[in-house]
Amino acid sequence: MFFSTPRAFAGGVPHQLMESADAGAGRDPRRAEELRRAALAYLRVIR
Image (cartoon, rainbow, N blue to C red; front, side, top):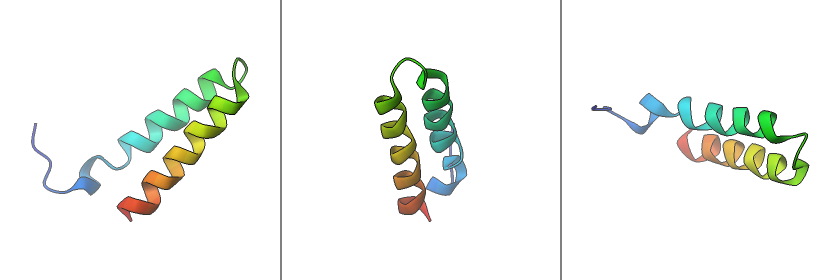
């Protein structure tokens, strides 16, 4: 699979991180917050 730019898959990584955060929020709220922060950090770098 070929992506012309990193932006081509930028939506996928943060989306996966946020979904993982939502799925695990009840079990481990701290980990969920870490995943949310990682998604936001990723978006800041890509943009």
